[in-house]
Length: 237
Image 1 (cartoon, rainbow, N blue to C red):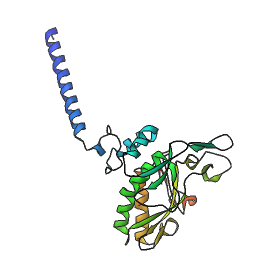
Image 2 (image 1 turned 60 degrees about the vertical axis):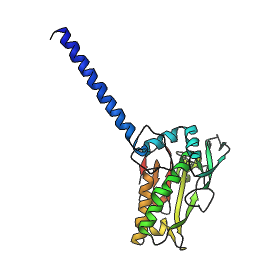
Image 3 (image 1 turned 90 degrees about the vertical axis):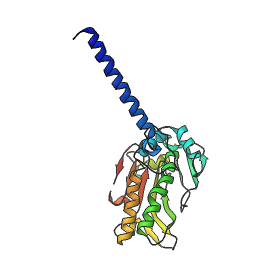
Image 4 (image 1 turned 90 degrees about the horizontal axis):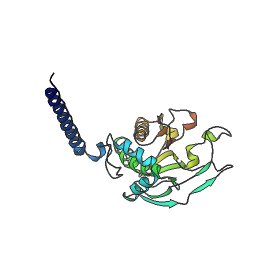
């Protein structure tokens, strides 16, 4: 092939590649924000396939997480950073107290910024729809039995530090309904069909938002609660 033809072919290929790149860019720009991995997380938006990637950036960037909370309708108050334990292994930074969310909780919710963000979306995107589908009454309060605690996994004297030790986990024992009935994880997981379906749906919905989700399907230690965390391990059981 003559040199001139080679150059012409190269220019044509580069032009085609540039056109495809432009078309691809335009397509990405046209995506709804919840389906664009390049958009920042907005806690008021519905979930999409890119929400998990957006949450991952918030989980890794403390300043971005704080800005994301402030831009939403969630109510939080910052907690002063702290370290404790024999060698300072426990404690938290950039943590908040949840003061207003879609649902009130039975106790004070002191959690990391990313966990607060995930809880807020989970309440709206998982808990409320599941209650509307399976229960005869809306959820009035979430029964919480633990957030921050300086301990190892399962409270053992040795082993890996729990995500609770950095305010990065929460344990949910049940849901109090507006009619006064309580759907507990302990009794409801293998209880009435509607209660069991509701609990499994809120568990599975949590898997779309939290890093770690453990339920009675995982082991006996979780027979009475759902464990949600924003730690490094991606698990949904």
